[in-house]
Length: 196
Image (cartoon, rainbow, N blue to C red):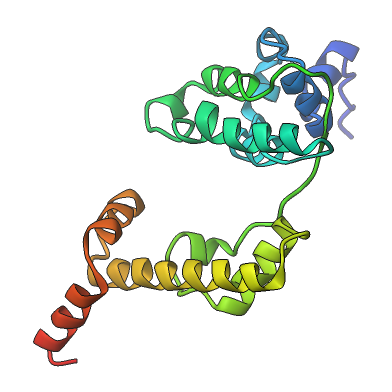
């Protein structure tokens, strides 16, 4: 029978998962040195996308909520998943630190996602699902406004889905651009010319 190897306290620490809430607190406090303190094993478990999602939403002061949401986009979301930046997790961590206005620990709340198949344009959105998502994101928003937002989002997502079906080799960013350029009339004419 093989003997179990004794694991040192240092090795136990090195193999620990990264604690989500501890990491969020370090980001709130702009602890720029924290990433360097992680073991190689912990660095492999660093997930910038999940942290960006959590950093973007806090409970509390409305102005601070707005700041976190807007700055998540400006400081991180715009660049975080660039193919070059993705190769540099420490840079991604520093971008996440830049989100915080350094006002101390905040209560971050989880915001549900739309289904991945809708976001990745694998299936068209259903207005019911979209409205449910926006209702969870903006619980204090009037029902009529939620109807309007979800109707428009669903319409635009269906256009993008349509374009993705016509041009399956396009990247999502290119589909977004094409969606901005073409009009509903041009799509109708294209369909008519195709005999549909």
